[in-house]
Length: 640
Image 1 (cartoon, rainbow, N blue to C red):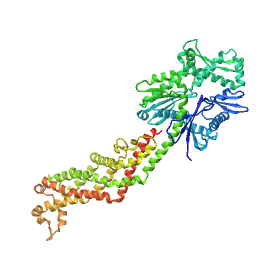
Image 2 (cartoon, rainbow, N blue to C red):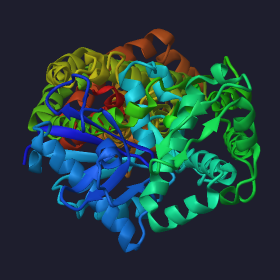
Image 3 (tube, rainbow, N blue to C red):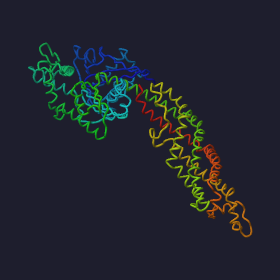
Image 4 (cartoon, rainbow, N blue to C red):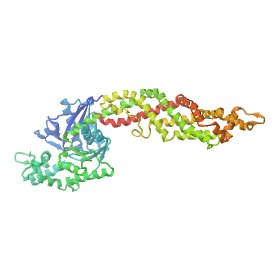
């Protein structure tokens, strides 16, 4: 079934935001609204008449008897937790459908974020729990992936940065997660204490305010009997914290305070307040949740550990992307800059962390679908008869390109030197000459020099014959998915050093060429023609004059073939005959005569051995597919 829209659902410990991206569009996702707000406090209230309420409405609606906040955590079997998560998501889902902001049903695919520090099993269990709310299509993905995708889409990273290393520091309400994105692959890193969330600061403000409250005992009784009042007071502490970090300079004066406010009734008020001096104390006080370390100490230790572990791997991130609502706290950026200084690393806080994850989740979902379709289309092309026919059509051109340098190389590097060695008495018999040519030919064909020669010819063939026609098939795919046409082109051909050193196309050709030349051509007619030319045209007369009687047996003259065979196998021809019969000009004439025959043998063998011919087409097709697969992996990240 066709998916029309991707819903990025950022269910945060502190705040919740939702964005929507249309699958068939590359337009930026749009933020959706609940209670006329694009970002809501993560709150779930229950009203005896109105049922479940979320966000601001749960906080301000009179008559709410149950209120839950900050309830996002790893999935567990606590029934209250599971019911709260299900009810919250289900209520959100119905409000979005009722307001016509989403289609719902199978037309909408929800992408919901989770901390990158959660294990795969945690993620799977969380997804299973969320699906119980009745959303047909739902996936859970790491929030760090959403942050990376959002930053990539809005142009924060150039392609070289995308290919290198980016460290994402996600400081949320419940956790602080470190994720390394290297060559487009996400690698969650476990640095420090993962319970390091900014909600701990809210609680510290709450405890400080309660301890100093003149009606402390009464408040404790109220909170014990009516937990929703405590939840509202904790939200007032969060408000004071956010106000402080939004205007730190304003509250450096000891007489200035960032405040929150909550009314219990007409006589009891809960008013948390902080300024710089108070916040410094809060950030440096030991916390039981952090093993009696302070918040700022734990964050510093985590960043330091990240630095040390990346140093051990030789990784210097080009960018540190800071996201999560608590990334607005200036001291977190300063600590990151201290351990990862410029110019090697750029520290970039997200300007809208409250919207970043929702927008990124919508982009991730759309990217997943489009990237999958992109890969499928390229894979279909690679497996098509069209590609096979293209290669088969141009195999004769490849053979023609190989024949000339191979035959010329064999003559110049093998035949001529061997004939001169025989003439100079370095090789004893013509049979030894034959073996010498065979051995040297095989060595030469397997040499680095010949491999380079074959690779060069293969690149010439691919660039001139295959690439232009292949581009006609890949260019429309690139246009459809809004990636550069060059992404799937082989502008410089298939180069083994850049593409796939294990199987360059030249190596594929080389293996078959060696087999062809050694077993069929060199082992057959070519060498025989050389020996025949020597005997019939240049050596037989002087040999017969000198050794004529020696070639008679029992009074019967041996036939011509047996004479030639006997001379080749047994006779160590004197040096003066070799010099007389085989001057440089004669050797050159022999090579000129054998060259056309050698070319013809190569051509006929390559073309008419159909089984090898088919195998050659298959191997080249496989190499093209493998190279395209690598290119697809590199360019997929550019899909919007």
